Length: 381
Ligand SMILES: Cc1ncc(COP(=O)(O)O)c(C=O)c1O
Image 1 (cartoon, protein in one colour):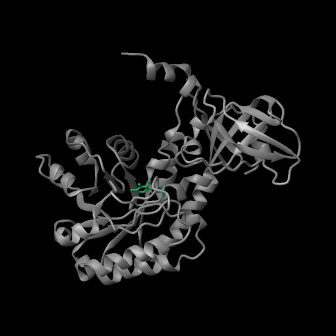
Image 2: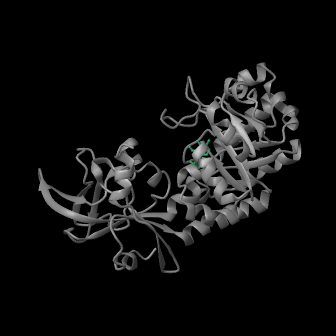
Image 3: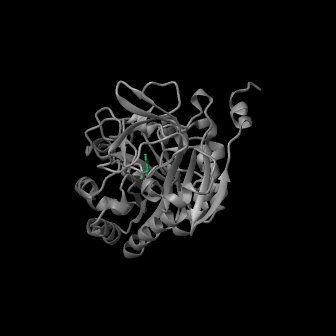
């Protein structure tokens, strides 16, 4: 993206920018896989449920995957029945089922208990029933991301599924075991385990959802994926779904921010920005430093970029530049499309970033938040 062009546009700051060309490139790449394997692609809208994104993504996917009633309602509004709507969640509420049921084409229960609670309700539905399973294969060292950690809350234990012959009572299985994986080794191992446990009984199912968590646009070798999907279809006649989120939107999202103060603290240069980690809380949650387009690895001038909230740890990171930063300078963070805006909050009363999209140097305004939005959230009825 031409960052100087963006900076010259006089956009309000801070602002979140969706680069539609990048989004479409990600979708085109996924479409190659879809054509090669005949797998079905769902966009996991939790990563960024912005309506404009959903509309752009819709022609390239077979539907959306959601986690809750509100996500399902939004996805349904956009899909208008033109595609699948899958839901999995550990917390499906019985009192919402009458609203949820008519929207869904597929549902993967997280536990036998949830399956029992929901399927015994009187509300009729046409959703194809599946179970999310925990294949008990950990591929991550960090428990915050590992759905297969000990005492996991996510999915039916594969051994229990096997012991109870529960596979006979469903049409599909759902697995989601990785976080930002850049190769298919976890998928290969997981499918091997499933085949080992259930063998030909997998043919009783109609579908399998392989979840999200793979950064398809950073994976070089697609062969293992193509082989897995082809075999699942050939050996068991299964419809195979994937539901990426981050792989579709992350590198399409940028955050433009402006320096509002500069000073020295204990010998280091601090630049206070008009954004905050609360506009991308995973920076603080996971202690991650977001990539900055303006960073010059061997630049002479080092600055700690700090957010404007009262939190001492509201620090985006330390970066280098060829010139010292000054008040009014604009900076752009990249790869912030997923799990940023959806988790953003107005802590300290700082407004949420405005939202723009850019395509072929055409900038469109999508959203500006006002004091009224803050007031509506916090003013008692
Ligand atoms: C069940 C499920 N499916 C899909 C996704 C999307 O994952 P990602 O955005 O990493 O592709 C998630 C992410 O948490 C998930 O929990």
